[in-house]
Length: 507
Image (cartoon, rainbow, N blue to C red):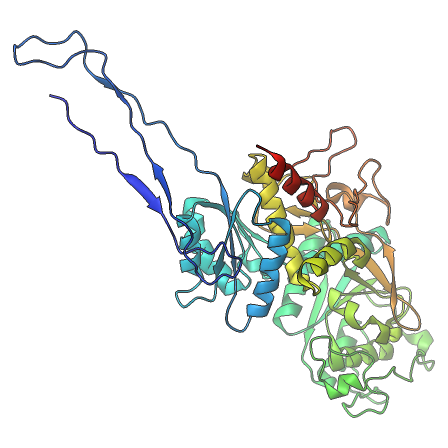
């Protein structure tokens, strides 16, 4: 007797948003039927007792492959809504709604939480998830995606969230420090030290320096962490430089009310009255008394991480200990970019930053579309969306391609997703001018694989970035000159326009 098999349809009408507003709007229902085809090669036993020549054989159901989709999880409500909305807009610039693959947008700040947003993404059939924004949300989303091996390109800058399958797309302190160490090594620096604030940022920079030196085969760097207390800064700087304690006679004591004021302002606090009225220190020359008795410090490159009034105190401590000399290369974070005009006392110091000229085409495209400038973190949403879209269109969405050694060119330059979830970025090196301000002295490398072995500022032949008609840099796989360039992730607003035109003309 033949058993009957019931074939049921599975409808999917999950509460994901396709309207670009992220309000949980229910999309149109889409039903997929799982069809089982049973073929009988012989007859079943009849009532007359005669058996058929063969037994019934059932073939496996023909798999119906759903088109791959992309999920975007960002805060569209709550305190970070403005940031999340700009990130959504940047992702839409990379993946317009009328193009494939489709992108579903979810609010990480919804009452049910970011883990629920991740579950919605899985229910929608998303094969890769972009976001969320914060470290805590990244951990919650990863707890849902990791068991089913769905990759996550998170926008946090907390490198502690990096793991296989979860990539940290944000600009991390480790990425900045690694680039500074590579550039300083090419400058002949071999002995590194750090004088950092006793904060999460400071400790992340310290860990990054230790790791970068270890991977480069250098000595373990000396690292000192300080509080905001002027005496603590002065004394620990003296200890780091192996100078006599600054607490004795003749030590320069820095007071918050000093007439010279700080020589740097905090870029994160525009309303800081002390920072807003900051002027350059009047003491720009090194002390002359007893200079011949000062021994050279046990390092030739010193990493700093402070901003605002604390940086002013650190600069005074550097001056007191005669460390503002060519023999010591001062290194700093990207935060200095926003107020380098006030850092004349650190002339010759280096810091890392993106090249604004390289980003200009993308910025213009964003402004044309949304009548405002993108926030820097929105850049990562654009790159992530464009990369995911390109890989899906070419059926290459897998870990091996995501982490290919050559990396990809994004709106801010070359980046490489490492198998451990970390990211390497090719950043430019800027040098502080004598009167303040800076200039780009080492452009971002076009070859992450050999960046440490190339002369400073050199470009490997055959690995130039291609510019689009809009001025945006194409994001593409960078290959060695002997290898044909792969079109794994080529994107730009002009390419989107071309794809859109082709899609509209296709019957």
